[in-house]
Length: 326
Image (tube, rainbow, N blue to C red):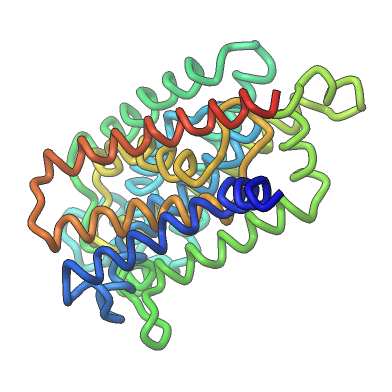
């Protein structure tokens, strides 16, 4: 009986134990790791990928995939930045409209991201195209649109109010961290305390049963991908604000890190299983791993290999767990 209880505890909270073990291990090997400044830096560094991973979590729970989030981030970033440039900048993209309030680039980023997500969802829901193909198409198209819009050049010299989203502080906490925490809470509420959240789990668990039970699968799929796109747009705003420029090449590979974070956090690619708490912990594991290995002077090449092994291991564990349940 005790053995069964232990198995259940490990199955439910194992990922939290892994994070705790990593924090303790890194603290032993590096005196710098467990300082307040470094820990805040860890969360700040992963906050952009964290925003993407929140949307990807909903997508994967619904038994889908989103390969376009990094490209949508870039497209949203350059679009938003073009409306957030200083009026004194000689190469301002729209010199005739003056300096706009920060709400304008914010809404542009959210609108662009949401529109890309709606297109993804509509393609998947209305045409039956696999999510892998639909979002792969958006991955290419959004990146191309960002390059076309900027002619391949960065959109720089942003206003102070714009840069606040990436460089500002509230007390001692960086604004990107606060934005990530806020969106994590909102996403958790959506997933756990709304009909939409229940529909996400139902679609991922058994799409045919969801249709029979009266759930409008097509509409909900569009909502899922639209929300993921909105978060990608917000991530684009935050990232461009942090580096004071919107670049068409930014966010390369971020979609893979976002998928990795939610996969490590226990979101099942078989659909119907996953939590926002798990996605947050998965993100922190990636952040602690990257930061700790950097502090220990481990080669970036080895870091990629270690990360790949962890991702594959997480998927293998998930597959074995699902096989046992069946």
